[in-house]
Amino acid sequence: MASSITINGNLCADPELGEATNGSVYAKVRIADDQYGRDPIFWSCRAWDNNTKIFQSAKKGSSMFIIGTLEQWKDEETEKVYTTVRVVSAGYNGGKKKDKSGLPF
Image (cartoon, rainbow, N blue to C red):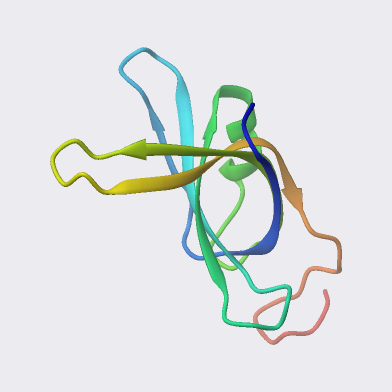
């Protein structure tokens, strides 16, 4: 059974949207989780098919939550082990949107 995780944070870059060779659509995102007031933890996340829809309107800096499962894979060439989050659910954190001046609109 995979370990589940909930992440609250801000996107580090605009989501990378694409289509796999089998026709499945995906979104790759990096999110910085600094809810504990310490140095942020950066998470690599992957969403597939219907779970990609929320990321079509997301931008760098968007405050979001991601619920997912931890997955590990090993690069056969370098033997390095990577951990990613497979997105099960995602959404925007609450709060009023602000314009570039920082004032609510």
